[in-house]
Amino acid sequence: MQAFVMTELGQGGLANVEDPQPQDGEVLVRPVYAGLCGTDIHLFNEGTMLDPADLPLVLGHEFVGEVAGGDASASASAGLSVGDLVVAEPLVPCGTCEQCLAGRFNLCSDWEHLGITRHGAWADSIAAPVRRLTKVPSGVSARDAALAEPLACAVNFVLDRGRLAPGDTVAILGAGPVGLLCAAVARGAGARTVIVSEPNEGRRKRALLVGADVVLNPLGEDLEAVIERATEGRGADLIVEVTGVGGAMAQAITAARPGSTVVLAGLNSGADVPIKTNAIALKELDIRGGFASRAAMGRALELLADGKLRIDPLVTDEFSWAEAEAAMAKVASDPDTCKILLTAPNHIQK
Ligand SMILES: NC(=O)c1ccc[n+]([C@@H]2O[C@H](COP(=O)([O-])OP(=O)(O)OC[C@H]3O[C@@H](n4cnc5c(N)ncnc54)[C@H](O)[C@@H]3O)[C@@H](O)[C@H]2O)c1
Ligand SMILES: [Zn+2]
Ligand SMILES: [Zn+2]
Image (tube, rainbow, N blue to C red; front, top):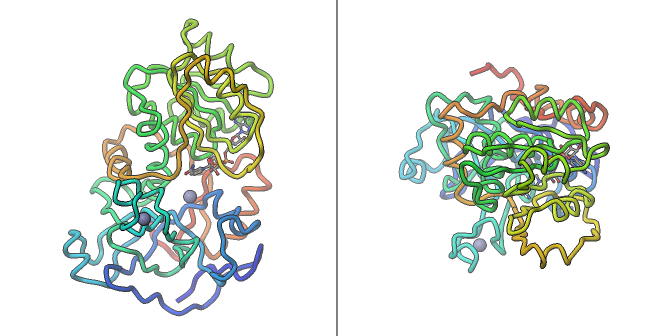
């Protein structure tokens, strides 16, 4: 089959590779759409999360595709048939460690990850464990379902880790694809006021389109003052940081109101960040991390099936996965780019 294969740091392209061989409990899936995620770009250019021993590697971990064979009894017991449209949770937990047994699959101590530690979805087909696949409900398009994986992360950050309740006010720092999905989830979950902080003007406009009430530019405006104004002095119940920028993490803690929750989910800066630690104690802040998701995929798909989420404004481009390198370059060079979907070559829109 053909696939986009990373061969070395910053190098890869279309190549012929052996067809994947599904193991017991696995099926073949033919990807229809695959999202390009910041993690793919960091992995490709900087080797983040990559073990060089896994090269050459087929990239791609956010995908929707059609079941095309494999372990028939495993798929039958999961209610899946050939031709079904499925999405994947790409982190494959061991299922037996203490974290897995406690249901914290995303904190598994012995995980694999499609498109990171084993072959991914920018390919004619991928072998994926049935237990990590969910059937896409009827009425949800493949194009929308392509965002189900990052949407499940947003559900985790806003609803599970953030415990947002209807009527709450939330501030989201960062309006990249993940921040925009967080804003859409908060709006869909009945937040009273959704405030989004983002320096990129085009992304601020997208935030309004997905359901934010108030947007601000943190480089020219004071986050705390804007939150105060938007909440008649009360402050936000929840702040979700999805920038990966150290300054924004510090800002979240400064701007949080007493007794509120701050979810830090941004990655990649790896920086040491100066934080006003007294603020955490004096305001009794609930500072919580957010990583991937657990048990959130079903709710992400339900939100899509409800038709209440406005996620279309996220997607700015479609490329064939064979052109993944050009797609990654566009993210770096064009500030108007937001979420890019990669399609199977010659794919027919569903
Ligand atoms: N924890 C997880 O499981 C998980 C999952 C997916 C993504 N992430 C991380 O979440 C972050 C967001 O992902 P993305 O794909 O949307 O990335 P992105 O880089 O497209 O978005 C980050 C946004 O933050 C904005 N920003 C920069 N400085 C800011 C500031 N001071 N205040 C407010 N906004 C600011 C940027 O302009 C950008 O639009 C990244 O760090 C990513 O690595 C984490
Ligand atoms: Zn991703
Ligand atoms: Zn485990």
